Image (cartoon, rainbow, N blue to C red; front, side, top):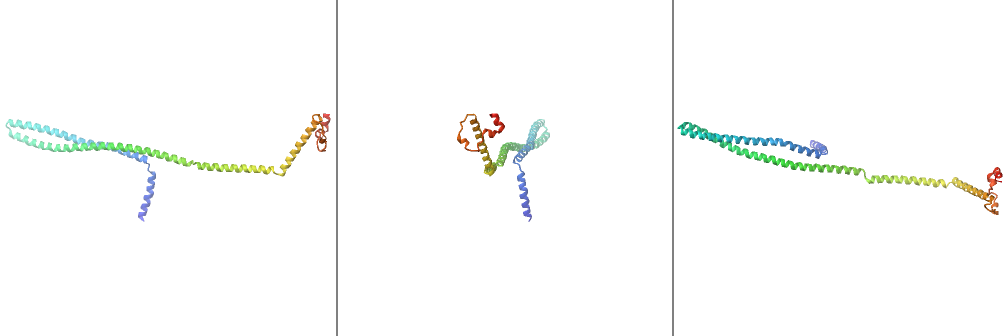
Amino acid sequence: MWERLKRLFRSVFGGIIDSAEDPELILNQVIRDMRDKIPQMNESVAQVMATEKMLERENAQLERQITELDGKIKAAIKMGRDDIATTYIANMQEQQNSLMRVKDQLATAKRASQQAVKFRDNYLLEMKKKQSEAMQLISESKRARMQEQLANTMASFQIGDDAGTFDEMREKINRRAAQAEAKMDLAGSGVDSQMAEIEREAYNIQANDTLLAYKRQMGMVADSPASYASPDVATPEKSLGPSRSKALE
């Protein structure tokens, strides 16, 4: 049971961490960490080189002391002071032993200094390579993020969605136009519409007859017996009324 809970927590928190990790921020932090190590490394290299310098000075000092003791031994022998010469010899032997020990330490310190400098130079070279690679990865990450944003934007503006809207609106407009057309046809096919059309035609016929009567009265059109055949044909006097007829006479 406990193992299952641990596995569950690891999966949940692992997913949260994975989603929260930003490669650009992590790479920038790695570069900063590598740069922060350079001063510490320079300090360590400087300490190794300082040890080498101290041993070089000690070596030079022992060599001078041995040279001085050699001169003193020779002077004491010339003066017949073998006792003093023996003391100087013992002192010189001690200094020679110290010199041999210092030379060994100096050789070791030189190798350590060379290795430290080489390690520092290799670290700087590797850091530059890692920094260049990190910058390239950051650029790729930015480009990938821009492409992802562009893809999301394009996905939110699919042509199919707009096409469906256009089709739906076109169908509504066509349906409305068809309904309007049907209403007009229905209104034109009714009895009232037909009667209104008949009355309009009758008014036109009456107006034409009245015009013809005016022209006949003014001598512009010859009289025709057929024009008097129908009792319903209106004359100018009938259509204009009594007062209008007198005025025309």
